[in-house]
Image (cartoon, rainbow, N blue to C red; front, side, top):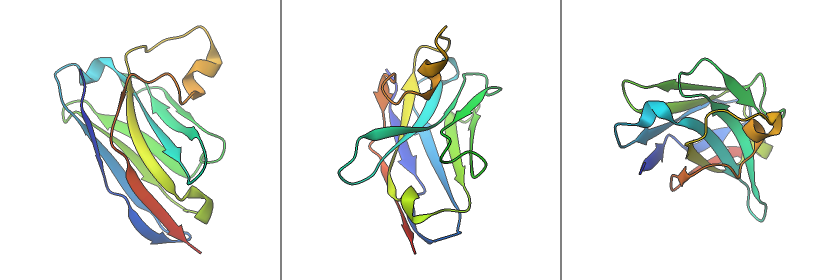
Length: 129
């Protein structure tokens, strides 16, 4: 069982930056792949970024590549999402999620928002134009 708590959301102007953090409970955090998924009003949850358990492999949605950076600190049981050059279309609730499966033969697996076992409660990010 993993419990996830996000923080760091808020209101920011276009072009600004935010850093989200997700604190995980449990002693097995370093065995989980971690991801960030977002959901805009009236839309489905979509994949944003993913990081493997050791932190040496990352995956990004095309819409955030080059602007967002996912990282993790296994000693602190925390995963981060640094968001730069924010746009109004980045406005959404951002969820942190944990996946007990760290490897798949399917490359599309790593870019799915549906593979996660545990979810946080979400944090709102609003980008004003």
